[in-house]
Length: 63
Image (tube, rainbow, N blue to C red; front, side, top):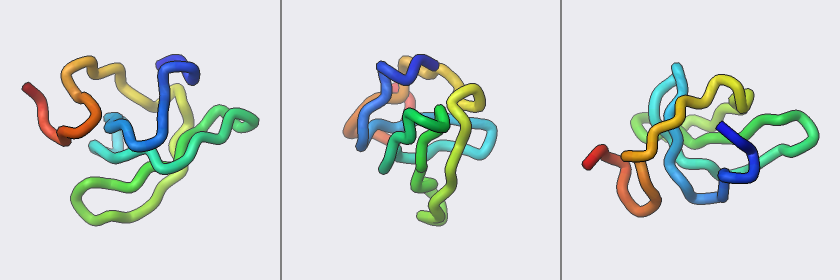
């Protein structure tokens, strides 16, 4: 996934599950994600994000 496509509040998927982006660290090429299930925060490297066009802002489910 490209860093320029990331925004705070968007939903992303990684090998750790689905979560909401709450912070973007351009210097370290990572995002801080709040996981949907347990609300835990985790820093995830940009290369670990999975491109999911069906996962969109305002909805934490696939359509």
